[in-house]
Image 1 (tube, helix red, strand yellow):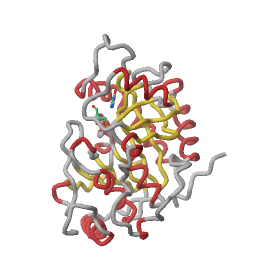
Image 2 (cartoon, rainbow, N blue to C red):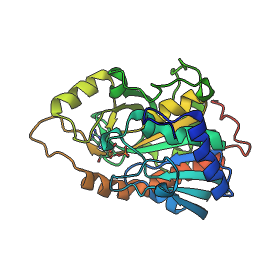
Image 3 (cartoon, helix red, strand yellow):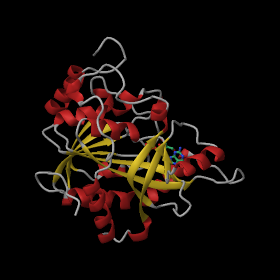
Image 4 (cartoon, rainbow, N blue to C red):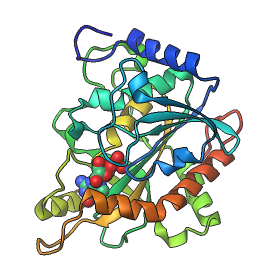
Length: 294
Ligand SMILES: O=P(O)(O)O[C@H]1O[C@H](CO)[C@@H](O)[C@H]1O
Ligand SMILES: Nc1nc2[nH]cnc2c(=O)[nH]1
């Protein structure tokens, strides 16, 4: 590894990717990052090769409840996939580049499509707990204060310096998500909106929630923007799904949420998120060419 903790070099990432390719027979083109309480998706992967994060060179460790800390390779909807059963968050003490580093590993092993899921708080007053929001764009609060996962030693083999970010969340995949959600009968519980990422780990004040709502965000969470930024930078297309596990209070006298409650709520809707992702994967073209918007 590079002598400092600044960033991992291209060769460091190659080392991790070589390790994985030696350890598993799978060559997935699809990756899934499982959010809090949404790791059940990895459990339904067939014929699994499981690799614990602690056994992977230079890999961070999961420290948050609801994140098991392992990579699950196998088949989902008859396609090879890799699932991150446990993501990393900045509030665990990881710099953003490290939070998103696994995405560069995905790219190196051949991933072309990434599904990013998370548990999020609803800001949009029309949303309800249990809704599933297809992410159409995000606001990164860390990004607004110059904290960006792409910052650091620059190696163009990872992607161009100023990559365009006008369509972070793939239009064709979003259309597919809406169609599949309709077919699955998820109907009105499926929304499309803007996710704002804050730092955490504490939840925000009512005044911050009100501010985020005025900024145009529909859901608030503490993850996903770094992974998505890095994925687009290296040319992976992305679908983001936020499960609304709580409604951000609008008045200070309303009870705040907590991680246990979020995990509990996630459990009640995890299967729907799972079915949506699985069905979408099954409908991806076999050669995984881009999904064209109609
Ligand atoms: O984003 P994921 O990993 O789903 O986790 C969400 O749930 C936690 C809050 O309890 C926060 O970490 C928030 O970001
Ligand atoms: N910041 C934040 N993250 C969440 N993750 C799940 N719910 C919430 C929430 O209400 N606020």
